[in-house]
Amino acid sequence: MTYDFSKKKFTFGLWTVGNTGADPFGGDVRAKKSPADLVYLLGEVGAYGVNFHDNDLIPIDATPAETESTKSAFKKALQDTGLVVPMATTNLFFDPIFKDGAFTANDPKVRAYALQKTMNAIDLGVEMGAKLYVFWGGREGTESDATKDPVTAIKRNREGLNFLCEYVLAQGYDLRFALEAKPNEPRGNMYNAVTGNMLAFIETLDHADMVGVNPEVAHEHMAGLNFTHQVAQALEAGKLWHIDLNDQAFGRYDQDFRFGTVNLKSAFFLVKLLEDYHYSHPLHFDAHAFRTEDYDGVKEFARGCMRTYMILAEKAEQFRQDSEIQALLAEINAEDEQMSAFFGAYTSEKAAALRAHNFDRKAIAAHGLQYEKLDQLTNELLLGVR
Ligand code: DIG
Ligand code: MN
Ligand code: MN
Image 1 (cartoon, rainbow, N blue to C red):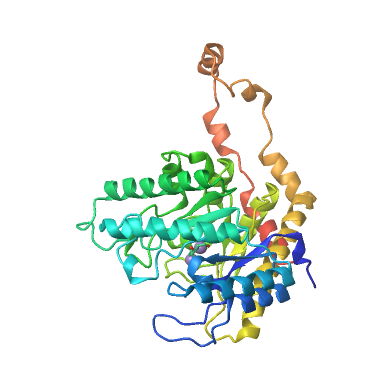
Image 2: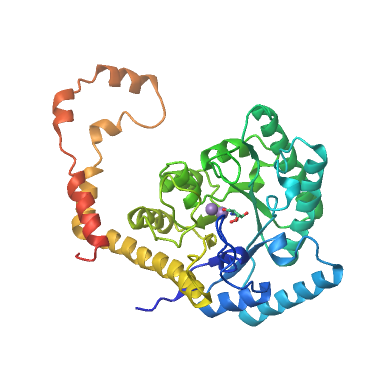
């Protein structure tokens, strides 16, 4: 079965398909590819766009000449393939200077350098066409709370983001921010650990209107959470401006597996939510191929991410069209005219009527909800027997 990937804004970071397979216990298994070559690879597999950290594209110690030649080769590859750059971000975690974080670091020189580096990286992202800028605080955290007051850390984070929002406004850039949460790794504990933290934190910023979230499957799973519920809260708040799709076994280090590798059923409910609400921003696969793979395997990884999304989107449509499932849902969610009178905005009349109403608590409690049947029908749809 073939799928038309052009129907969705599927994107990959340079660091995803460019991952060389190294891990804490072993070095590279794949040769490093240039940013331009990675764009051609993504063009070959049918992606919509490519994202990058500043140093994925321009190494931190690149000379001006190397910078210019890399940028022109990257731009040519974008032109040749038609790929776009919807999102950019800053690497505020790899260089040793960030060993204690960036915006929350105790050393004010590090905090100031992080602002400088991010302004330069924002300029680069805008130059390549990015309209969204992600902040993942890879080292904004601590191994020991003796080292940093968590309230001070929050204030430093806010100060950094407020400054950078003002920078974007001063530059007149058409750019919004999206904050990405993670509970730990590489730091022992990270601030703003899950998407819910980010949604609360955003409301304390000076320019909350230009800041959304970028939830990642693996990161919320690492925290033992239902990713679809986290995404639903961001969606309902109008703050779901980007999403990092991958997969992750609960209770493991950040595995960044191909989308659907581990939890197909939760991936289905996520895709169903995104499709039900016509999510229109990029679908970014922040994942990488198994260490076992060569670049043909990396292409299979990328195609697999996109195929799985398209297949689950078809299953979501099938769920919507399944008459037995929809009849059950209609029954389960049936309105009750008598109760409807009690809902909506408060009035003293409603409150009085509600107080006066007699509920047959035991009869209501005895009502079976048929959820076993509904969930089994869902399983059988996913297993392809409906
Ligand atoms: C890790 O999940 C982070 C970094 O890869 C990047 O900063 C961000 C953007 O997708 N995700
Ligand atoms: Mn991750
Ligand atoms: Mn991510």
